[in-house]
Length: 310
Image (cartoon, rainbow, N blue to C red; front, side):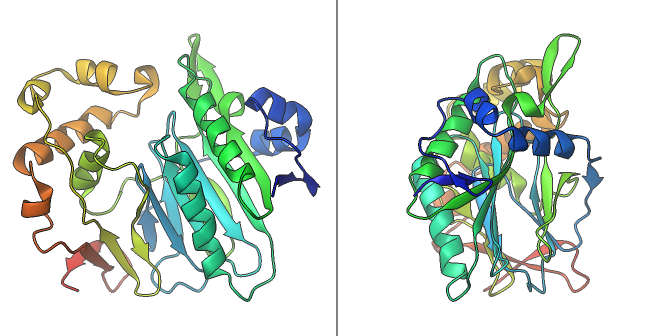
């Protein structure tokens, strides 16, 4: 089944984002309107934050979570699927790993959550920019093609990607928007910044840094109201101590796909992950010794996540 734009099925997935916007000027208008919305600073209350190569799904009547979101997105894309009938929402932060498999998982999940409801699947893509190495362009097209191959119609309603998410400062391309949030009760999407990214970010970043797993990690069980991580492992990483001795500038220039435009916390995040990897070379033993996930519950006022035994 094809991607649908403004009620019209797209016969062939576009070869590039330029062709997409030439054939759908309404998408260009929607992206332009989205980029001028001021970013909201979102606190921890009612938030489930989705990191790179993760996804979370929930329903509009979730009593524990009211906002789902992600940021620190340069060449990655944030993918949001919503079913108009059930109100179920999925948000994923995709970096190019296992795109076909990831998209299949996302579509299957939201269909499972929407059984018995009539409605449409709406797709929103935000992130990426006109980076000089074209990482964002390749990822955008890969994701669009993967959705086009699904066995159900999917309405593409927002594509704030590539050139449409790009501004220029001093001749350098920068993303307009690094992050977005979604109000789960209404489905409203807004540009956002998240100072609190939830528990165990060093562990979560280590999983990506070592490239130990290609699959998206499902981090939230909306039925239980629990956040969960793992279990997973990653291969031992050589040269950790050497990397930790390097300057912030060198870490950014060698370990980022878009070093010119990384958020200021990039090197700090990488150093924390490297220290975690040095301490936990074999996470299956030291982090997940019983082969079970780590579980977290929101404290009573809906703020921070705290680890629990479950």
